[in-house]
Image (tube, rainbow, N blue to C red; front, side, top):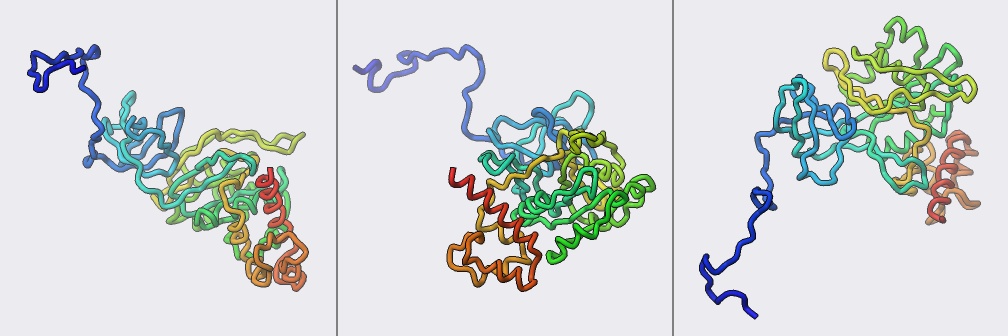
Length: 333
């Protein structure tokens, strides 16, 4: 039954009043062409610190961005109060396309992917030579993530005053990895020039276990200081003192370092197992003689003969197979 006539006039139409007194929402969103460009320095409980020109501006995500999340290193468009004054709040209205994304999962069984940093071009894998003991398989996992994200890996070995670096470096000799070796005196005397040379012109994300000296190293490189901790004498593990990622500029605007919280594991759930071999360039040529669909952990695998011929270290093949075995257990569950 028609409530109104075919051509009702205004007097015939009943209009429900808007109790809130506001205008109806539109699907058309402003383009914000006059928005300023900035870089996300840190994220803390929904508030983001963004570097706009030479000012640090506190901002929040605009509702129009929906569920899109931002991480340290993101380039964003910001509107509103950009003075950086106390108690002011700007609004992030756009996230620019990312050039790179470093990702990880909590473990290989965790399907939830975590973006660690965005737009970095180098990954510094910080490992102590002692106290706590180095974990080569953790290094391997970080290398896999670096190659997957198209980041240049840099191996940073700390605490060389407690143990020699040669045995660990020998394990990765075939990879032709860039590396630096530091000790406690380097931090105390400011002798970290060799590291600065490796960081110049790059946006470098620092990853590593708690207690390896990662934040101590970052403090020696930049002017802004972060809290550091110590290693537990019983467990040999470090304590988490860095709870959020933070981008810090190197003196003289020569580059950026991004200090990330210490991790106890680096899951690779998000990486296709068939790409894991690409992180082992010393082993990859040996797969040419493998049978089709080889899992690289079976009797017909050609990698055994490749390693036996001296083309790569047995420990490298062991690391690859441990990674692949972990992935296979996850897929079979």
